[in-house]
Image (cartoon, rainbow, N blue to C red):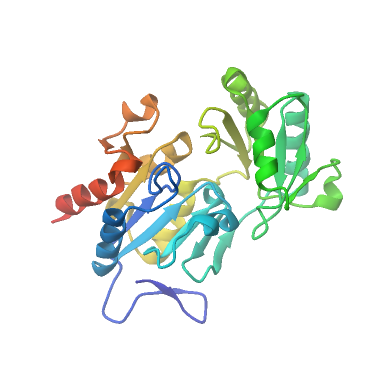
Length: 293
């Protein structure tokens, strides 16, 4: 499968060109609800490797968080992480590309979130994007509080000193369900020049995470960059997802599926395979390979 040579260029083993690219979301798609990988899915990933198809995971997790669930010997070649802000080869973890918000954008975004009275985090630049400062604006927000507890070793109350904090990978506002649509609309209107992505909370499955990135950051933009480096057209691509932050990736790939546990808005819009707990990714790969024969 593709490797990185001494000059930082992508290369394939002698005599083997990259014949396609497979990109899947992680939580709720490739990963089962018990945070394990199904053997039928792993078997399909190994088969893709034998066929010279690059295997990519595209996740909203930081690289640190991804590594907490990645099983030994996971048969993938690249990880697009932080919703496209970074990409690394796997399993070596060499970061191939990363972007960040500069101070002025961090200031503008944080001021907007404070004005909207939203609870939010500001995450350090890659590779330390699992480290974050947080700002509390509400007396109760269980999902926000749970994320702080999970990352207690890496989280700190942020005083708003942007010059001392410096650039950031992203800002994440965590919003309870009853405020989600109003908050999302307001953030997108106020920060129209930045990328604002909606994600369903991977913690409680109900709250909305509003993620703010530099202009142009998305899973699909990084997928396009990676595919170009590998010499593969998106017409030879398969993407599989389950949530709103996968929409642009699903639209990018010529062949796309959502798993059955995706929100109704997505299952009505894209072709559907079985759920993440019922080998949906394996089904998607089998259908795709059948179309390619």
